[in-house]
Length: 89
Image (cartoon, helix red, strand yellow):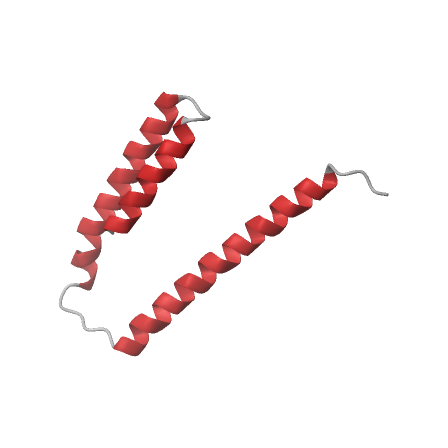
């Protein structure tokens, strides 16, 4: 959870250099509340439940696969948009 907070701070620094400060700060505050809220609420759902190591590894692997697919789709979309602006020879 702490690593998510670090990434949010880096994203805020990057965004404030190119976007208006107020919307970026409000978005950052909302992100922090969601992050902290999930850190507080999630243990209530999994309290007194035991998960096997295989299950946890599977959830982690599926999460990383999903993030990878989203990143690849975003990259392909950005590449296609960049190629649309280039005149064909």
